Image (tube, rainbow, N blue to C red; front, top):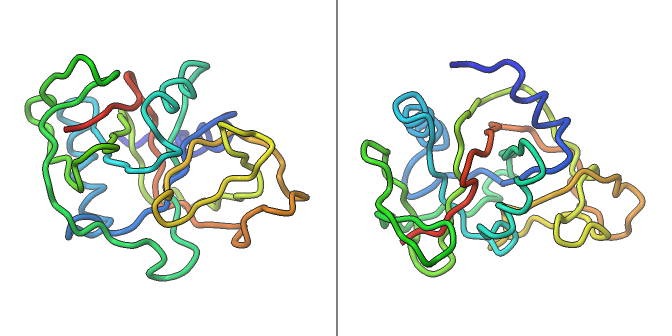
Length: 195
């Protein structure tokens, strides 16, 4: 179901996860989003693989405990700026804490990528594509260190962020405005480890 207020909720939230979107495991962006929205229609949730030290499950879980939280997917700063994931391994189990593991929900579409240590998944219960909005990266700071602006780089293209004016910070991102390609609402358990 299309939620016309999802983008407004995400942009007004105090905290969020920001992720640079690119092709993944041989699938186009459009196919990936369709598959994940199909999961939500069938199961009321989906798992989205991420590999970033700034989006570890414990960090995202902490970020989400204070209230509704969102993931905002943005275009890379330049065409081809997001390196496509080429490894197509499939996760079969997940864990909230690394101790108790359980099978991914029956009927869930494949959760693919490089499944190794530090493979995580964000958990969504709503996902909307092409919301027609722009994200101002200068309005966000690093969630772990709110004195620093967010820094999206290869190998760390998903980051937990908090809303804060960073426009006068000397280390703010060079590319200020990014087109939002999708927005999702994080749902319990918010983020998990995969294997």
